[in-house]
Image 1 (cartoon, rainbow, N blue to C red):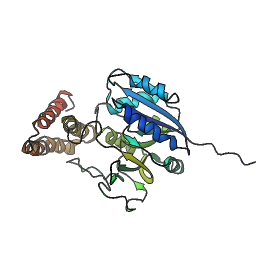
Image 2: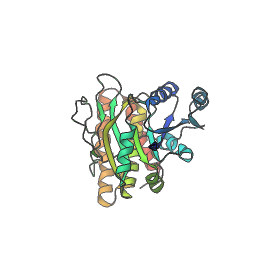
Image 3: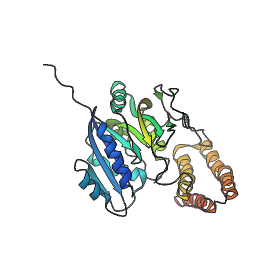
Length: 299
């Protein structure tokens, strides 16, 4: 009698912040996964009510962890790590869903390529016409720290179905080899929101791990369901964290030029555009981001 193959053990980690309905929709969608042995961990990251308790009552098989305060994206994900038992950790935003079982394709890429530390699926926007959000990242430019999402806004017509390396992982959906995670360490928590997965990707590459894109799995993302596409919160963290990323990951002349560019070219240009559209609160938020960056004492 042929011995039954043991399913790979995958731990799904998702962070919930006042998003009970979104989180439940994700959990429901995961019921389709049969190719892997799933462990699901939900971190209630300081929600107003104890949503961890509600989720545990509704889904007894889901592990829940409760933080009384919002620890940010990295802090929330890191809070789950002591409870992870899987060989692979799938960090999924709670505003994502799956519609077919492609997890095995991601696991296979890690199992067949021992030098790969992270693999990301194709990510498409949830709302019709459901274009592509992510089919890989291009590298950041050395001074302006700008890059592109491969395939962004394009219809999923097969043009982005080639597997390959990505410069960085996408925080909404990334399957991480547990042994690589143990070597590299947890996500940097200094960012709170935005840029932490980019910085973490750099950390993985410095340790010799590759980051791959595999379109054989697709995740659907309800982008900006929490923070908004152009909210003051986003303006604050993007402004502050781009400066923070520069000083953490660049050195010498490149670091100096990048900080100067952010302060004296990028910030004034964005502020002018926001004021032209009457978005004064976004300008104030961006200025606060600059101020708080200097308060961090990174220079």
